[in-house]
Length: 403
Image (cartoon, rainbow, N blue to C red; front, side, top):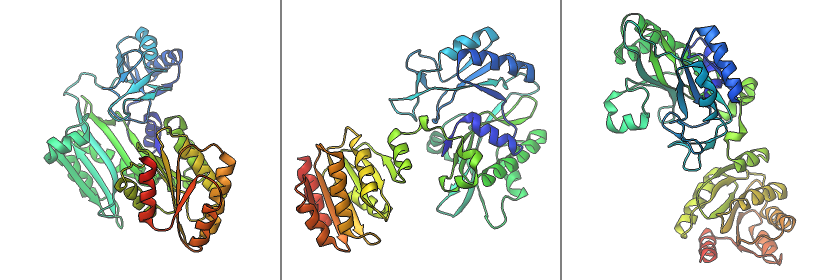
C-alpha cells in the first residue's frame, strides 16, 4: 500500500527521523492558514507547496489545467493562496502517472530548508527495500540526490552504494557509518547521517514496509540531515498489524477496478490489452497471459479468483473485466483442484445469466476434477460461451474471437 508524503513523514517522525516540517491542506484558504501556522512554529518565511499524489516527479510534472508545476515555492505569505489554487483540484501529469495524470486533492505546505549558512546545502538519495534475490533488506544510497535513481543507475552506476543487512543481526553500526562515509560526509553531518540511517531503518522494519525512499535527503547549510521527501510502500499482507497505517489508505489514488476487486477478495491488476482473463492461481494466471500473447492478443488484466472459485466470485470477476472498454474477449482458465470443474461451470452459467447482454466472446477452459462434466455444462447452456479442455484449444478459440 502506498501512502502520501505527509503521511510518510508522520511515520518517520514517530521513529526519530528528522523531516522537513509541513502541514497538509485541501483548499487554498486552508493552505494560507497552514502557512501562517508553519511560520509561527518554524519561523520559515518561504513556503514550499507540494501536490500530494502517489507518484514521483511532481516537481517536474505539470498541472494540465493551469500549467503549474506539482511543487512550487511561495516567497511571500500573500502568494500561498494563488499558488495553492494553481495545484489543488487540477490533474498533475508526471513521468510516473502516465498521460492521464492524477487529480490533486491535497497539498503539503512545507518549510523552506534551503536557507544560507556556513556551507552549501547538499542533496542525497537514500532508500531501504527488500532485495528478493538475496532474501534480505538493502540500503541504497547515492550522492546524486534529487534525481530519479533509475537515471543515476543507467548513467552513473558507480555513484550508487548498496549495503545488505543480515536479517539475523539487523543493521550494524559499521554499516551505517560505511554508508555515511560513501556519501562523503564528515564531522557533524556524518554523525547526523548515521543517526538518520538508524532511525530510518527502525521505521522501515517496525512498519513492515517493502520500501522507504527518501529523495532527497538534505544536508542543510548548518549540517542537519533531514528528509525533504518520502515515498513509502507498506506490505499489504502486514496491514492487519498496523491499523493506524491501514487507515492512511487513499482509494482515490488507486484504480477503481482494483479497489472493487479487493472488496470482492479478488487479486486484480489492470493491464493495457484486449483479452480479459480470469484464472485461479497466480502461476496459472501468468501462463494464461503468455498463451493470450501467443494467440495474437494482449492480456487486459491479471485476475486471480483464488482456489475456491464459485458463482459469486466468477460474477464479480465478470463485472470487473467487462468495465474495461478495451476488452474484446474473455478467457476463463480454471484448474479444478480444490474446486470441482462442474461447480465452476455452473458458476459461469449463473453469472452469465445474472449479468446478461455480454457482447464479447467468452472462452472457458476447465481442467482437473470433473473437467468433462464442466465442459458439458458449458456446451449445453445455450449461452454464447465456448469451452476447451486443452490450453492449446483455448488459445485457438481466443485467436478466432479476435479475428
